[in-house]
Length: 143
Image (cartoon, rainbow, N blue to C red; front, side, top):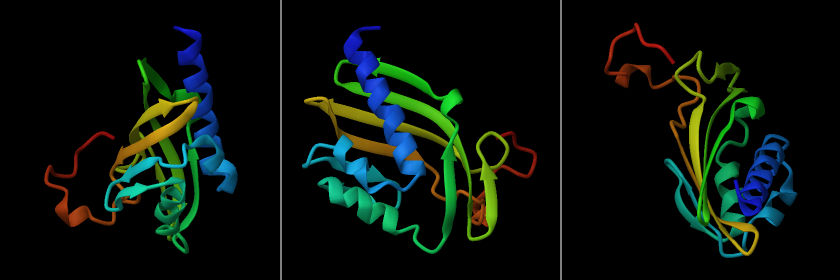
């Protein structure tokens, strides 16, 4: 891997740690005009749109912890794809990626000038499986 790839991985790891700790200085990792995508939130523009997205979880999200040792990093030019799992608790219900319906994710980061310019987050935001009536494939599934 190139040193530039290692730097992107270092920034992405820092992103997950700051996100888990709800640190407002996470915005230091973003370009000012960052394009943020999250399911059900849609697109937001500017670093503060990331904070707007996070506010959607206020009062419901007890905690989230990404599984740092289980992250897979795939660098390509200005991009870094990160696949992994998380665990946490929301509205008193727990989830754990690989054990429950929620908790697997894939982020696609685009970088510019040593910062994240496009954090696009792909996951099912129904972390705790509350939308079970719309699960279409029976009860015997592996997560």
